[in-house]
Amino acid sequence: MPLTPRRARRRLPSVVLVGRPNVGKSTLFNRLTGQRRAIVTPVAGTTRDVIALPAEWRGVPFELVDTGGMFGASEDPLHELVLERGHRAVADADLVVLVVDGREGLMPGDREIARAIREASKPAVLAINKTDDRRAQRSVLEFYQLGFDPVFEISAEHGQGTGDLLDAVVEQLGPASRTARAADEGAAADAPAAASEINIAVIGRPNAGKSSLVNRLLREERMIVSEMPGTTRDSVDSLLTWHRRRFRLVDTAGIRRPGRVARSGQIESISVLLARRAMQSADVAVVVIDAVEGATDQDAAIAGEAERTGCGVIVAANKWDLMKGRGPEFVKEFDEALRRQLKFLDYAPVMHVSAVTGERTPRLLEMIDRVAASRMTRVKTAELNAFIKKITAQQPPPHQGRSEVRIMYAAQAGVAPPTFVLFTNVAIKFHFSYERFLVNRLRDEFGFMGTPIRLHVRRRRK
Image (cartoon, rainbow, N blue to C red; front, side, top):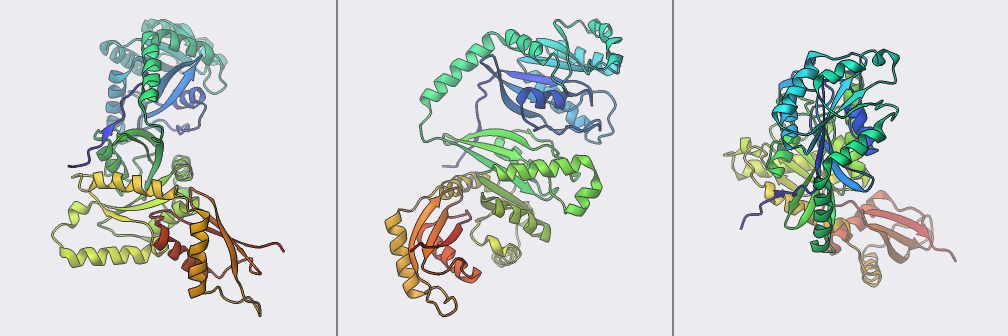
């Protein structure tokens, strides 16, 4: 029976921020969610994908959604795709917050968005941003022509007026918010106690197919996909339920070499920073490799960053549909070349997948679940010490000077990643080759598939 993923059912009412490019939607989104998740720059059209995070005000939970700029001036070549995503978010909204720029005054793009909201028959409130600037005070009355009620004068940057705006949001949500709370309570009662959320960072170079892979796993066109490298800018979270397990997929921006990132400007620099933060908070990182190009030095650098954060690692060779018909020898040669390039990740499983056809994507979810569980494995102290005694009898640690080195005792200090402390009679550090030997034997004995292992050596006190 095939493993079929499905999107997690939305339980929270959706509050969607819409507006022209560069009116301050992302600044307001970060202010209301209390997180710096949306990229904020003076460049119009910075936000492309739809970003959603849970929020709460006065005990009322809801989902806050940031969209790309609709209508108005934008030099982004993907603006039409951004506009399409904005319309879709409005269609799914329980409440729309139209954000306008008080400094610029009423613009034709504001009228077009207002018309789109009315055509969608969605309740809406109007937020006039940047009213902390005196220039905005003269144009506030113009916005009443849009016909929305209530109207709020706010400053997203400084937080002015945002409390009143949130009061109106939860009041407008009304029954939807009560239904959401009841659904959350019911779901919490029904959910198995062991079910926990697995955070997954989908990482790799630009144009490796990360967004396409996330869309395939979600079974919807959530992320904007194009052949233009650097399409994804924000790190976008999406919830997925599979076999009663909850996965939080984070689609990240492609990571180029540091020199190229530095020369490209502020937007890409922040995008890469958010991608690295996603790795640091991930349980499992899926390193997406372009199978047509094979693994490169930059792929190895990205995978190395993931390994250093301590998250589990899976290598996904994407675009495998283009490799068909090359025979079993090609597959063997491809995997050998990949392993040579990523030799420090010999413990990471390699999956051949296709985001376009969906080939092996359900097996990828299964592998993510196994790696996440492996990362939380804990070995009983008695079993660990019996194992250490056996392998050190076969292969003792190298001498330190004239002293014979003995491992007196071992204990597992933690999980995520599995961390072991070895107490010795004299040594405070093993040679890297012996550490590698111990780690490999620990994997052979106890599993730890796809997860890094940390070893600490301490001299036992007399």
